[in-house]
Image (cartoon, rainbow, N blue to C red; front, side, top):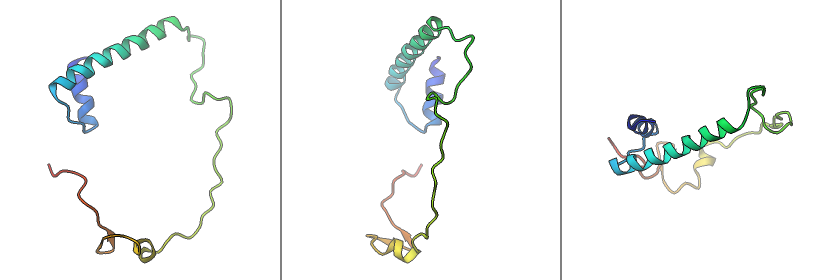
Length: 96
């Protein structure tokens, strides 16, 4: 894994990292991938079918029951701050 890959991954996740962190994550990722490579070499999986469900149980869907939802006024009645019919909160994201 190259240094460019670490930077690309951080950008994809919108996670700003310093050059020091980039170096640290580079080292950590190399160790992780090296360990995965060791496992792949020791475990023979050539005759195994790929699986998406590791528990032999079939996937079950829940029985969802549709019910009426709250009206907008009912949903907002206990809000600490409301503006134009919506919950108002402090800014969470920085403006770029």
